[in-house]
Image 1 (cartoon, rainbow, N blue to C red):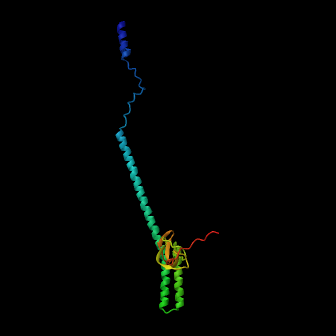
Image 2 (image 1 turned 30 degrees about the vertical axis):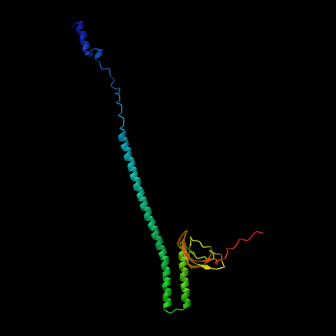
Length: 200
């Protein structure tokens, strides 16, 4: 074989010249494609849905809380009524015994003593329930707790003083249940109000 033929054969066996070789390194990563920008509308809609779900859950939780509080309040009120009713039933039982004793021709003094005992039992029951009585005489008339039935002319107390309780009033705490019906002192016609003492 001639020298030229051997050179040609070597070139063919070597895969041709350098221009024909693939110099790409298989370990080199391909360039990353730029990430697509998020759609602002889709992001806003997703946020809206998330906030709406949170709002619905909060509203449901609040509704359940309100129902639970209402139920517990009604149960507490019912328990309070039951306790008060049991106390009042004891008073009613004693009233019935006193009536039966009187109808059987019992001693009037004993019947009266029994009624007084029942009255005290009832007053104690109301006091334990937080009820206070408005029945004080000799105090200035107070429209917040008194209901004036009439006036009575008198010189014994200053005008505007409660001189007699016609019907007791009752309060629970600071709340008035029933005002006391009272008679209020009035000045005599033509009389002048008392003067303050002059200083020495």
